[in-house]
Amino acid sequence: MDDSKHSKDLAHGFQQADKILATLDPRTLATTLEQAADITLIIEDGIIKDIAIPDTNLQQEGFATSWPGKSWIRTVTVESRPKIEDLLSASANRNSVTERQVNHMSTSAQDVPIKYKTVQTDQPNRIIALGRNLRSLSALQQRLVRTHQDLERDYARLRATETRYRVLLDTITEPILIIDADTMSIKDVNAPAIRLVGRVRDEIISQSIRDFFRQDQSGRLERLTARAISDGNAASDPIALMDGQTVKLFASAFHQGVGPQIMVRLQAETAAQPAEKGGDAMLNALQDLPDALVVTSPDLRILTANRAFLDNVQITGAAQIRGASLGDFLGRSQTDLNVLISNLKTGGFVRNFATSLTDRFGAEDQVEVSAIETSQSGQPVFGFSIRNVARRLPSDPGISERLPSTADQLTNLVGRVPLKDIVKEATVLIERLCIEAALNLTGDNRASAAEILGLSRQGLYSKLSRFGDTDDA
Image (tube, rainbow, N blue to C red; front, side, top):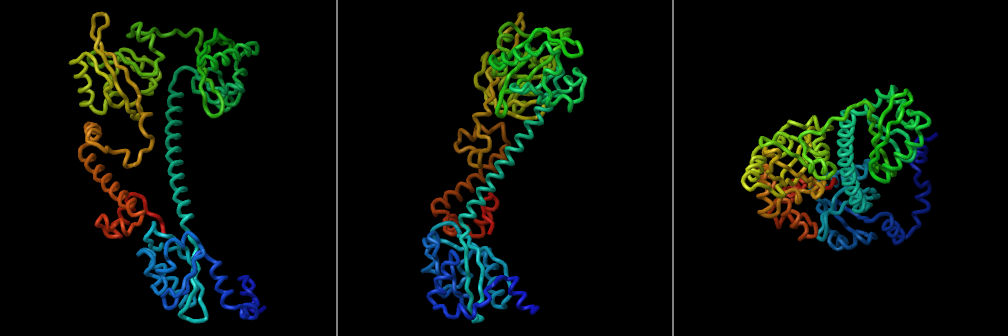
């Protein structure tokens, strides 16, 4: 078979172009070229001789009146000029060249991204450039990148939460089962529960909790879970396991995903309950308060704490925290804690003192502390109420939200952040805010924004690149 004919078949080109297209009049050919792309250029020796723009968005840029007679390479940004040179060189040598995406400068908006293909005519110095407007695609790509970054942040937070949950569950010495309230199937289990039922983990997960108790106990289990869902918490009388052991069940309901879940804590009937020490009647009554409560000696050794404080510092039992120093958890620095205690001793109480609380894994939350100096059995003690205010703060603030915008906000950073970091970050913020203001004033025209700021165009691009605001050409 003739090689040239075989090549044409593979290219799927017109087979009778010379016969059919030769009879077409110039107007028909011009209309065809106009409709073949968003923008079509006729170029001779690198100069734009004529232009057709059927795309209504591009018509508003004024290219049709400003480009004819102008060098094609002068219409694009500096970083796009090598791509235009590639297109012109390949066409002049009749070489094959892939599409090239370039950015055209615009006086009314941000740079206009266009992807070009060139067609060589029968005259060596004349080419036809067919371009496709990528502005909508560029905006879509930016949204995709931002969405991907949001997902990465969510995944990181999810992984951190999962790690804390697993450490907490495996650290608890009592047997714990997490069950689905609708199906009664076991979703998770800790090591003490595995030892109690005498099976491996894979044999427990997805099994019904009824399988581990005597058959005549099913009704009591269902009533326990129903009461936990309605009241939030529930406890049972002793219930017999399959091996004859007798345990008490303490159930707490919570919502996860699409349905209610129940955490079931098993307690052997013979296990002695540790007596609460170091607390008074008022503290015992406030065990379920969502704000953390701590009572310490004057040297800040913890005497007792409620459940909310134990949850906040990731400690499972009151015995583990008793005798520890409150300074190990409260305060951004020792100086921060000294200020709090000094005010407490001077005035007898403190209200809404802003500081931080650090758990035993090093995670830090912003808190407000109210404290009072009082006495118990004739001995002075300090009482602390600690409220987590992290939810009042944005989860992923931008640069303009992370740093202060007033002198009062700036002084609030003293003691939290070193002075050199405050000055450095404030300088970066001011620089970015000025660039954003210049871009807003010029309708996002970078050339005009650079002139307003007294920067070169390349200098502005460099700063935008550092802030992560540039678009790939």
